[in-house]
Structure formats: structure tokens, C-alpha cells
Length: 213
Image 1 (cartoon, rainbow, N blue to C red):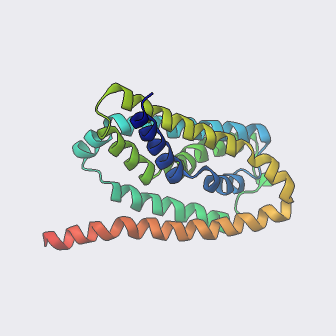
Image 2 (image 1 turned 180 degrees about the vertical axis):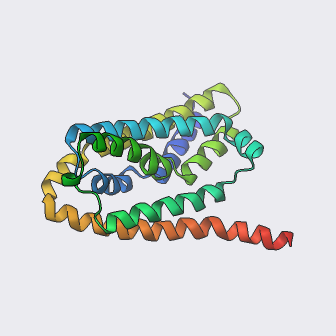
């Protein structure tokens, strides 16, 4: 591999790693899966990462076309992501999820629900990661660069998966009290992130509306 390709590969990888931020995903994952079994936690992590991979791949190869056809904007994603973050953050702040209230069927449904939204989208494959996949694909005209892009996504999500699997040990370390404190703290942080997401998306939309008037 030439020096230019190595530089490009590092650029692609670091951009995805910085945007997805696996270490930043872990506390959210920990709080949302604290009251389910280790087996269910592993299943949730795997499904969330696989779903995020499919979504990033979909947008990398057809995202811009999809946006153009359906009239969807990245800012729209930010607004919706902000709403989802706020709702989930409020639930965490209230510590609504309780193992005592959940039977096996409810646990399975809960795992399916959170692994797709909000874990896969918009926490892992958020507006930033989706935009990055679209932009880098447009900047990758040949097959080699496309493969480097694909490899960067795979490696980043693999690291994310490993980090999420390690959350069970950290949960055991901090205990029940520590988890409750973290749950409320992460709920508050997610609500703050939600506000940032919402206004980062709504501001350019409002500017476009005012310009059109």
C-alpha cells in the first residue's frame, strides 16, 4: 500500500472513530442495559452494531440519492435525533426501566427496541457518521478507496462492539448504587445532547425558511 493510501486509510478511520466515539457510547449502553442479563446485553450490542453497519453502508452507497429523492436533509436527522435523545434521556433520568417489572417477553422486546433506536440510530450511526459516510464515498472514486472506506467502518464498529461487551464488567464493578447514579447522570447528559442536536438541526432549517419568505 502506498503512502497516500495509508494516509487516506488513517484519515477515514480516525474520522469515523472520532464521530462514533465508542467510549462515549459505552456509558449510554451501560445505563440502558443495566437491568437485563449478560446474554441479552451481548445480543443487544451485536444487533446494535450490525444495524449501524447496515445503515452506514446503505447511506454510503445510496445516501445522497436517497436524500435527493425523498427530500431528506441531514438537519432533519439532527432534529429527529434530538427528539429521540430527549425522550430516552428523560426515561433514564426517571430510572423507568426496572427488571422487576419486565418478564422475558418484555425483555426481548426491549432489547429489540433499544438495539435499533436509539443505540444503532442515532447514537452509533448518528447524523455525523451518516454524513461522513456519504461525503467520504463521494471522495472515493475508485474501488481501492471504497474498500478502505468500508474497512474503516468495519474496524470502527468492531472496536465499538468490543467496548460495549466490556461494559458488563464495568457494571459489576460499580454496583447497583453506582449504576443508578450513572443512569440519572447519563439521562441528564442525553437531554443536554438532545437540545444541542435539535437546535443544530432546526437553526439552518429556520434560516432557509426565512430566506425563502
